[in-house]
Structures are given as C-alpha cells and as structure tokens.
Image (cartoon, rainbow, N blue to C red; front, side, top):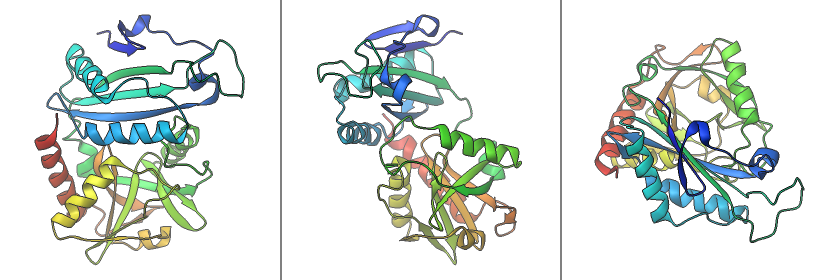
Length: 286
C-alpha cells in the first residue's frame, strides 16, 4: 500500500512527494523533527510534542510553518488516510531553500519546508521487546552541545545503534565526562533500592516528552525519583534500568556492557511504569 504523505500543504502519494535538492535540511541538517505515537487511532501527547517543536524552532530562529491547530489537523488526517491504529507520525521542519547552497541562512521570508508521514506499527504497545528487555552498550558521547534542540543531526546516534547491533545488543547509552547523558534515541534511568535515578534537564540531553510524563506518573505512584548525574558503573550496579521515548514508551534494560541487572529480566518498577504510562496515554490521547 502506498502511503499518503504531507509536503508543504499537499497530501500526496509517497511516490510523488518531492523536496528541493537545495533544501537546508538535506544539505545542512538545518531542520528539526518530532515523532508522535498513535494508539487506537489517536495521538499520544500531541500537545507536548507541539510545544517542544516550537521551542526547537525558536532556538534555531526558524519560523513556524503553520499553527498548532493546523498541525493537529494534518496529523489526524494522515492517521485517517493511512488507516493507522498503532504507529507513528513523523514531522520535519527545515529552514527551506532559496535555490542554492550557502552556509549563510536564507532570507527571512524563505518559507520553511514541512513534511509529515506515518509509519504503521501494529503491536506498538504490546512490544515483545519490552517483555524481554534491552541489552545496551556504553559509548563516548561526541555529539554537538545543544542536544535539547531536536534536530535531524542523527548520524552519531545512528552509528551508536550500529555499534550496539555489531556487539549483539539493542542500543547504546552515551557517556560524556564520565557521566551518562542519554540513549541514542531515548532518556536513560536506573533503579537502586527502589529509587529511580536519571540525569537532570539541561542542554546536554533531550527534554523528553515521554520522560516528563513518566516522571510525573512515577511521583504520583509514590515512587522516589532523583535527578542527578550518574556514571555507567552506577548503572551497571543497579537493580534495574529502563529508557523512555515516544516510540518505545518505557523500555526495560536488562544488561549494560555485558553485566546483567538484577536477575536479567525486566524489573518491577520498569514494568509498572510502562503499564501506568500506557494506561494514562490511552486515556488522554486525542
């Protein structure tokens, strides 16, 4: 089945969608993105993604391509046109193109490029990987300093996932100056003696939308949460660990650098948080 995608005001078959070869998203990675999950045909935490998108655009002095209300309508229409019950909506905004390649930003009246497409993911919520748990490796974090801006500069995270795959693992956690920053495409946590530990928000990590929701739900469930820097060795000595992201929700981690956590199976706190999050997400989806 050919997907219907959205490009600059038009709904098109994916085979007919086109973006200029001079688009700065293609040439300079001068673009930001968001990924919103879909469960039961509804959007999960759309408001959070829309707010973060605006923040990313503002931080890069990039103009908004449309209003939040228009963006919601585009998301909903793509979900409907593509028959998505469980899956993802990917959104990307670039600074656009003024018809040539130049390091200098184009003029302020250059229209941004707005692209959206869906990914059909049956079984997204009931992911077998969550029952098994993820095995991760640690790698050096050599990304640029503004990881709080959700840009399309994803080469190193992609390389990190390939390093993990080569090692027979599922993902990688990034380490800078001796401390874990985050996963390649997720926020990182460990649990010790019932306490959840995760790095505090700063320019060094993405301000995860799922992170925010899970932190709130953990506190509402009377779970102890501490935001501080932590080392990979601390995580290896943990009782359990997990990650959060819009596409994987709460994903238990069962092994770090070859060291099994607990009994090597998903821990009770990670499992409970996944259950709580999915229940809440379905109730508040739009």
